[in-house]
Image (cartoon, rainbow, N blue to C red; front, side):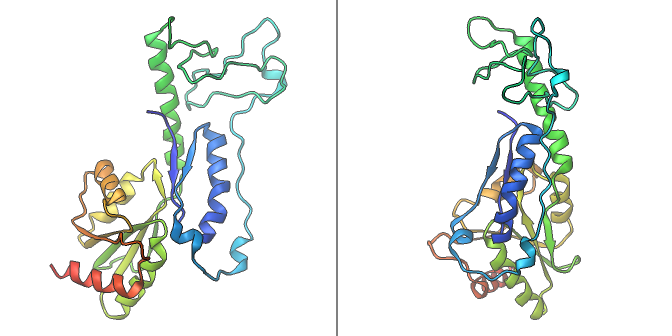
Length: 257
């Protein structure tokens, strides 16, 4: 029960960029960022335009104290200070007066543990609420999911991770056959873009969830976050990659019912 971000790169260039993005958000918001890559992305062959790698990431070290902001030897550095943003200014290694205790237990503002013999329920509650305020700023800063294809399509494919490449090619083939189709790729899975996804999925079109697993991992995640249960579901879990022709046939079958 702690704030974190979860991101699933969808193609090789994503993998190149997403680690820099992950470190950026991890430092800025002082949270762990979990990167969910997959075998399909890491082991397949793909040609990309080299210019797509000519990219300078944004780097924000977050709330870092300067030497002048630190207390003197008689003062106390409030490493976990309550702030409106939920982000407590951190010291850098070697700063005079910037030492603090970093433990796995709950703590007060001055990093004194309050999880064992000495407990402080009100402060524990304040610390938990302080940490979760970070998610408001993070959710507002994360880019929205990617939409490919015609805006007013009759079919929407919902994908994540390495299935994006197959799904977008299947989308192009379906459009060429007269079945207007677009594709929603979910990349930042947590915090989840609830309002964006709800707006897309409630557009009146036929929504098809596509996943390379048996249990429908993100399908369940969408249901928990939005209350929307995607009924049309295509899954593949025989150890072989999805291929566009196979997916086109599967989409035609599920939208015919």
